[in-house]
Length: 69
Image (cartoon, rainbow, N blue to C red; front, side, top):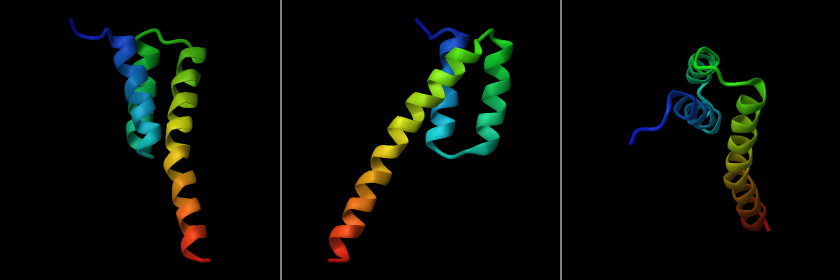
């Protein structure tokens, strides 16, 4: 069974944020609003994406610090 349009667009928003894709985010934000996603739902998808995105950056910074010792 395929995902509904709201879930698909919220997922696409999260993926766009995690991938730092500006045109993707603009497109999927508009589609999510058209699909009836609330501001809170969109903000939650963005929050989750930012949490996921921060982990690799944190690990990279830790490795940089280790290598510079």
